[in-house]
Length: 309
Image (cartoon, rainbow, N blue to C red; front, side, top):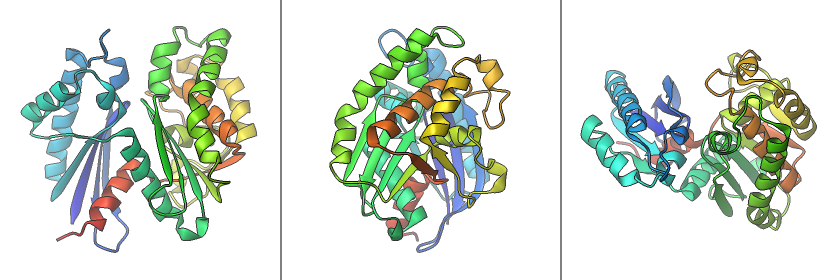
């Protein structure tokens, strides 16, 4: 059965088509995405403005048409932080449905964290023991920890790389004072969640998911995406601190020239790196393994678990 996941995130609209069967691993058949930057498409009241809605509708229509051409029997359309936190989210959902025929389902931050954790658990299996997972999106940071397929705790904080870049940095490269102020802000926002996670005990495996972590790992020497999903990739705390000192002095255009950094995300990688470093430091994590599965795979796995006809 071919499933299509339409993921409206804070950075991109992403369509993944997979062939799925009960008891089997989902097999990717197509992967399409287009940049959106919804967290930058807000007015002063926190509403997604008309230009942002038009971009979303255009991308959603293109993805829906592609899903039909790919033969997706079932469509799983989701929206995360940027739509979730918009003051006019219901209006946006109605307009998108009216214009595209697709009704987006907004995931709560906790649901997002739990679905991502499910994907990570399935990837590494039971032998990993307690898993602590960190996921940095454009609009939010998700953290989770547990020994089963459902995490013991799951948190979502408004510490996404795009959101922080848009709200905090007004120069390119960002000023040293702003970087330090943002680091202090992130530290303060992490306290409650990370204290609860540490109280559960140390992780058998610490994992990072999302494009931000993959990019940071690549910058510190991990294998490129062309090497495939089964190559082990890691991100160490010392390597991350070193790369922050390097990229925070560069302009976005210069960062885009670095291997592994895409032009549509080069502007926000500094903020993403600061969130990654602060999260790892707060949790006492010296090394993360980078998991190729994340939210979209979690959505697919949850759907497979419900049974396919």
